[in-house]
Image 1 (spheres, rainbow, N blue to C red):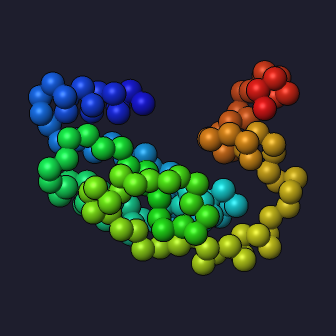
Image 2: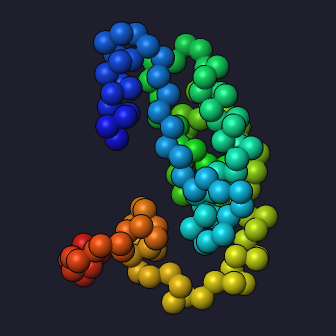
Amino acid sequence: MLGEALGRFYADKHGMEVVGLRIASFQPKPTTVRHLGTWLRPRDCVELVNCSLQAKGIHFEVVYGVSANSRELYTDPNRANIGYIPLDNAEDYAAEILAAMKLEDKPEMERAFHGALYVPVGFSGDLSKIT
């Protein structure tokens, strides 16, 4: 968020054209259920960065870095503003991922909050007060 705020500041104050990228799950292939909605394949990432660098006539945009996943978690109309059209879909790996998944492998916090497996690290609060 700090980077996005600075990008907006420079776009407003100095007339720069700024694209903030929110990179989701950058992986060679998706490996978790969450990745089915957040996966960004390296090929799509290259295209996203290229589109960001080549975009003309923008002021400030924030674009989610995800592939064309059928279960996409982020609705992002801004990708069209920079010409980003992702190609890959995590759904191609869904059967493999779902077959290997066990419910106990997915703690409640990982299912409920943005941040996935990093959310429970060092958590000492009361989950019942925030869900």
